[in-house]
Amino acid sequence: MTIASIIDLSAALTLLYLGKGFWGWVTSLVFVVILAWLHVPALPISIAFPGLLVALVFGLTPLRIKLVSSPLVNLLFDKIPRMGDTERIALEAGTVWWDGEFFSGKPNWRRLLDF
Image 1 (tube, one colour):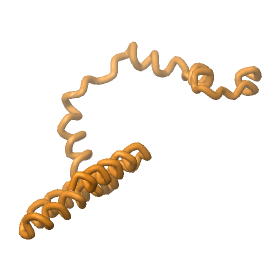
Image 2 (image 1 turned 90 degrees about the vertical axis):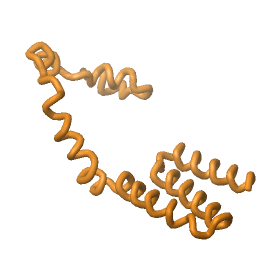
Image 3 (image 1 turned 90 degrees about the horizontal axis):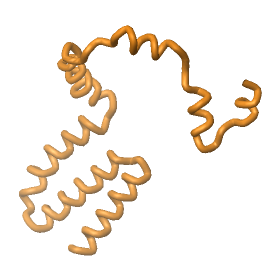
Image 4 (image 1 turned 45 degrees about the vertical axis):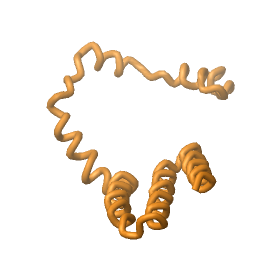
């Protein structure tokens, strides 16, 4: 069981590192369901169903937007302060393309020199 836990943790962390957080989470859920099934055969459905439901809601972007993000934005929309005149002027004053290009770590020197 310890070796299986280490393998599951390694797989989940590898998937998370690779930017596949949803699959890392699902991998761990599947592992927990398999372990539960090996020890208490009736338990996996009580673990798998809520876990699968949460994984679907948060893992599938259209479903997450419809069920979580949109209601949350609508709830908080009135509580967020409006943008002031000073902030609007600062945003409209220009862009940060030159700074962004320079500090990106791999600037396009030809573009900067042409500017």
